[in-house]
Image (cartoon, rainbow, N blue to C red):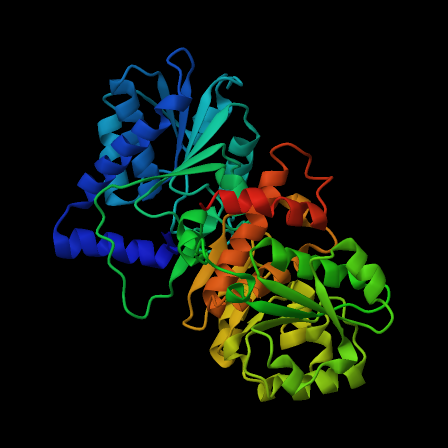
Length: 491
C-alpha cells in the first residue's frame, strides 16, 4: 500500500482543486462526511463531543464535522484553539455558528466545562502541514487537550505529529483513533506517530492520486503485498528444487546465532541448509537439529561456495580481522546472493570493492553507524535520509532493523514494515531474520522480494506468538517456532 508525505498529499490536493476543478470547499465537505461515517462506531448520543479546531484547513474539517454530527443528533461543542485563518476554515466556522456553540480558547479555559471519561474529543487542531516544532500558546493548548479524559479521535493526523516522518514536533495529542483522507501518511506508521495515531482509518474523498515521476515512493509492507513473493511448491517436487543455503556464522560461545539462522531457513521451506562451523563443534550443534548439514569454516573457499544457492554471513562470526580479510576476498569473487549481518559490519573494511547488487544488508542502528560513519539519527527524518543516501551510493537492498524495520530497494523505494512488536527486542531476533531472508534467496526469490517477504514474516511470527503469550516471554526460538502460523496466514 502506497503511503505519502505531506508534500505529496498537498500536491494531489492542489491538482484536484486547480486542474480537475473540484472546489476545495467540496473536498472539505467530503472529508467531513466520510470522517463522521468512520467515527460512528465510537460515538454515543448520550455523551458530549468536544471538537478542538485550529485555524487552518484541519480546523475547517473540524467545524464541518461538528455540523454533520449535530445534524445526526449528537451534542457537539466546538473550541476554537486558534481563530479561523484559511478561507475554507473561515467559511465552515461561520456556517457552524448557526448550528452550535463555539468557545474561544480563553473562554474554554475560564469555563466550568468538565470533560468526562466517556465523552469524545475530536482533535482537529493541526493537520498535514506541520513542518516545525510547536511554539507559544499552541504548546500549552496541545498539552492541555492531551491531558483531558475521554476517547480521542484525530482528523487526518494527530496534532503535533509530522505527517511526513511520524516525528513528534515537541508535544502532541495521543489519540485512540485517527481518521485520515485519501492516503495514509508515512507519519501514521513510524513511531511515535504510530502510537499517537492509535488505529488508523483511511477514507477516499475524491482527491485524484497523481504522482510526479521523481516522487519518492513510500509503501506500507503488508501480508497482502508479500504473498505474491512466496515460492510456489509443486506436489511432485524434491528438496534440491528448493535451494541450498550455507550459513557462515558462529564462533565458540556464539553458536546459537548460527543455529537460529540455519533453522529459520529450514522453517521457510529451504531444501537444504549447511551450517559452516568452527572445528570441533559440529557434533553438539547438529544434535539440536539433525535436519541440518555441516561443514568446517576453514573449508570455505570460492570454489567450495559454488555448490550453494545463497549464503548468510556474519551472525556471531566475531570480528577477527584475518578471518574477515579472507571473507572479503571470497566475497569479491563469488556471484551467489548473500545476506550480510551482525559482525560483517565490523569486520568488512572495503565495502566499495564489493558488488552489493546481489546482496541484502541487515544492520541494526549501531551496525549501520559503523557501516556508514553517519551520525546516529535523532529523528525518523534523519533515519530515512541516511538510508536513501546509502542506497544511492551502493546499489543494494538495505534492511534497517528497528521499530518498525525499513527496507530500502535499489530503485529507491522505501518500505515501512507493518508487523512486529516490542517482544522482538531480544537476543537472536536478527539472526532469525537473516536466516529467513537467506532461505528465500536460496529458493530463487530475488533480493528485494526476499527481504520484503522475510521482514514481514519475521514480524508476523512475533505477532502470532503474542496472541497467546506475553511480549516479555518472546525469544528468538519463539520466532522460529511461530513461522508456521505466519506462513499459514499467507496461504
